Length: 412
Ligand SMILES: NC(=O)C1=CN([C@@H]2O[C@H](COP(=O)(O)OP(=O)(O)OC[C@H]3O[C@@H](n4cnc5c(N)ncnc54)[C@H](OP(=O)(O)O)[C@@H]3O)[C@@H](O)[C@H]2O)C=CC1
Ligand SMILES: O=C1OC[C@@H](O)[C@H](O)[C@H]1O
Image 1: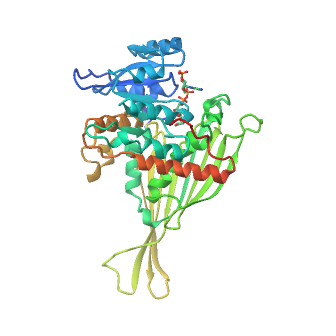
Image 2: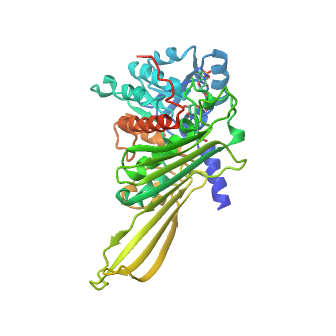
Image 3: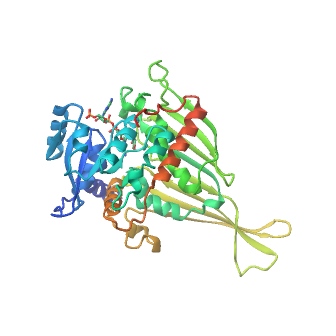
């Protein structure tokens, strides 16, 4: 197991470099010399024959030059806008602070570029509503493609996990995620209100997306949202951690908790789903008895599945008398699964979906993004309405927390 992990992670971060297609490769421009850009785009692009990271722009040219040199990016532009104005650039990657996502995504779309937009897509649902309903996105022919970079949703582990879930029967979900305290400095954008900071924006949004996918619906209410702040009087509009509870249309409760000041050692994120009782047909039983199943499904590692993940499915069965509910027999069936590739995930719905065990979620995401641009089929996607709904959930939680929404841009 340790050898497999080491080999997988090594290949994920140092992937085989493939030859780029002479015609039709997508040329990316990157806005900002952001920390996440190598992992989210530059490294995954190395193994994609149809992706070339062509240029980068930073607020300060020398910073962009240094970044370009370090990551083998051939061109540097003097400003973000200059990159958007370049006719040789097909797609823009936006790993800017959250408060700038909306403006630069709108500018990119208006410049006719495809957009890979870091999560969360915007600062508020009001921004998301405008962005994902831009008229350019439905133009014909060849509308630009925009994708909120919810990388983990493209990983086979998440898709396999979802395949065990029966959304209408879900009664409770627990999700947690963390970043160790030593990875996030208080001067980072995560703690700047003006930049759209907060643990829900940075990390909790993954928990929220899991809840939305598990219930297969949108929350009707944020029942509670308790936040912790640094308490230094400077960064206190940003949640350093939170615990929220949502009610979904079927009456089920989804809980999410996250911290940006977690323990020294990493704990994989976790989503634990409890189903209510379901009567399972069983012809071998007499008419006076019924078989009932309750299922618990847990995904350990829903954000960084490439490092390690495990899916546990525990089915508890009871055969009982219909008349008085008295149990006749009880047993538990437990199984664990992993899915680093769609081939490993198995099953009809994953047949033929591309991937390698060493692909990071970002690489799976890039595959889908390119396929969309090329008009090919994509098995999984995050569409504009999905991103708008995601922002609505974040709005709900921030409103409930008392911290208030992150600032909405005045750019139109
Ligand atoms: N998908 C994932 O796994 C992750 C996604 N993210 C997301 O990516 C985005 C960027 O995060 P991260 O890479 O950690 O952030 P960084 O702080 O490393 O990068 C942000 C970039 O934004 C640019 N920028 C422009 N204006 C400002 C400003 N006023 N203040 C600060 N920076 C500015 C800077 O570019 P310049 O070089 O031009 O100065 C900087 O390089 C966020 O939206 C975050 O949520 C973050 C971590 C993981
Ligand atoms: O987007 C993110 O995903 C992974 C986390 O480790 C990171 O802090 C967060 O911003």
